[in-house]
Image (cartoon, rainbow, N blue to C red):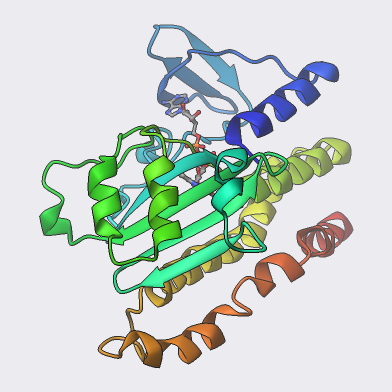
Length: 278
Ligand SMILES: Cc1cc2nc3c(=O)[nH]c(=O)nc-3n(C[C@H](O)[C@H](O)[C@H](O)COP(=O)(O)OP(=O)(O)OC[C@H]3O[C@@H](n4cnc5c(N)ncnc54)[C@H](O)[C@@H]3O)c2cc1C
């Protein structure tokens, strides 16, 4: 699904139920603890007070930076993203599926259909040493150089390269764990409100207890998979492409099972039942 489609869906649902007021163009610059409430200060010199502030302001969160001093670190990979119309590639597409991974030494390419099979989401990963990045900065909106991307994949088979050549030079994105976070946070807040108690902190702690291990596991296993797809890491480094393939298959075939099979509602319900009983 396109991020914009998902945001529209959320917005329509909020508007349909008149569930919240959305204030846009508000850049939060500071939070101030004022006893039993928090004051939010914004760049436009306005402010607001709240019982609870949820800092969902992304990887360079200014809210988080007031409480934690751990900056994000470069992962060793640059990811190029793009969308290609499936209608445009249909005449020459050679496989029975549009969900395909091409793997290679220090780079890999992933495509899958989104937006009701109208668009192909293209994700091209390239390992680049931090020392070679120059003044390149992590960003949602850095525009990649398509010639550079295509030349990075020049030894890949022609269909893979053709897909890359069709990628427009503009960025797009999606989200995974953040959506689960929002969902469980919503359930915990709902339970807190239903309980008509003043133990907001306890319900927020329950959210954290439930979400942190799963989110950290997603982060850890994604990093490991990134290495496997690029024939790096223990057991693969130094081997030929053909030698790596059986190992690759073994390591990747059930990789996502825990994400899909663990039922986060069941996990939440178990914890919430304990909380309600206390
Ligand atoms: C190019 C790209 C492609 C990606 N593709 C995928 C993918 O296919 N699948 C996947 O699961 N994940 C993907 N991700 C990762 C995913 O987008 C993020 O993990 C996810 O968006 C994080 O959600 P978030 O709510 O924490 O932050 P964001 O989605 O970054 O949202 C933060 C919001 O806070 C706002 N904000 C920032 N600072 C302030 C402030 N001071 N005051 C007020 N508001 C502020 C921002 O404008 C933004 O709207 C991709 C990321 C990128 C960059």
